[in-house]
Length: 165
Image (tube, rainbow, N blue to C red; front, side):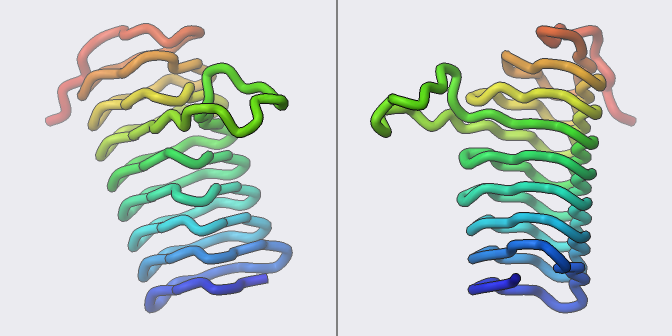
């Protein structure tokens, strides 16, 4: 089902069993089957794998590749040329409770240009992952990661600088 959505030129959307509502999708973007997109913005030349869930207000830049089974919650911005591995989850509330009566603070997260996040990582809300950084598979990222940095573990620790050439 596709409703109230803007789709750019030459985009390929496999929408069997997908729900796409109020999204803005750039040109030359490929969205695979069983994806749920709600009032988000996706740039040009992206690839969104199957079983991806993206909440309202999420902004995704250009040439971003999001692999299967990724959950991106409200408050997340992903800049250009980012890779998100399969089964990555983002959060936006450090103290989630069912009975908070709407009294909670949305934590914003930014994944800067050229960063890569390995499979099955969890990104805790309110942090920035620096440009060209690499997050190792299975990491739990609880603090900001500087530009050009390799980090992994639970919690993720900075391992070394990986200055790009």
